[in-house]
Length: 284
Image 1: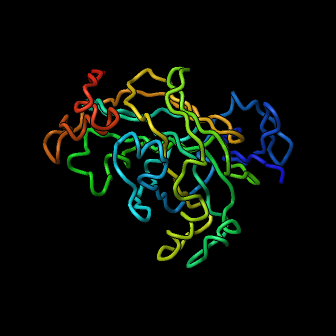
Image 2: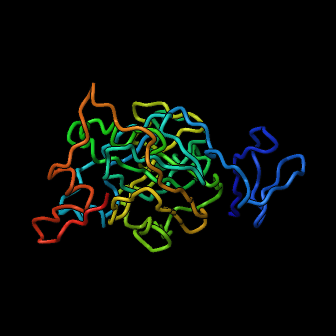
Image 3: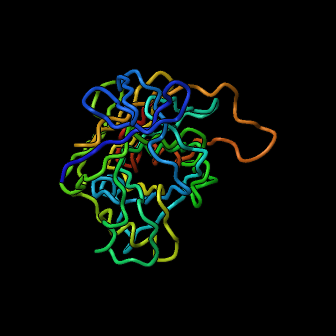
């Protein structure tokens, strides 16, 4: 099956869905813009963003843990949405902002209580995601992951929605400032895309545009303002974002404050680093 890539961009001040043709994006009325010059928006407008905790075998082995018998999930609020080319904000006073390159599937037809074998009929296509985690809040939000994974700008999607894409046997990589930081494959996922859709849809109705994030490979690490982070997968293009510092510190007159506990450091820096005798890098 041939693939088609759709993107949402601002074109002459209006939100327009375009089709990628080589290095150009083409609107339905024939207008064209170079892809590298376009102002991108998230490729879909979801009503919910659901993410699986652990799925890639390399990530599980990195942490020296075991997968549960079935997937577990968390929810990223819509206000965390970001796009290709967008700035990802590390709030002032925080230091453990980690990238997590992932493949995201997008629902195309309303589904509820379907079998895994029927899930393909309900998927519109696939895009790339970077499921950033602000681990400074892990001590207080480890259960809900609300601030850890749901803070503003921490869910870039894009650059486009690709239809007709087969998720089997595809490589997935994350780059930081041009260097490979993560490298994995969809074949190392314990639960494939169809299973994830069916599992969630047992009790939660999924509607067109909804997004499911499928998990990240090993070697998620902190990045800092000035870094450029890219996620790439075979056939899905490359999602690019840059890290910026938040304009104001996290307020101190309410709520839990950023922490740097053993739990925070070990998660952000790749598991039981201290127990393995690995010196933790200090990045401000």
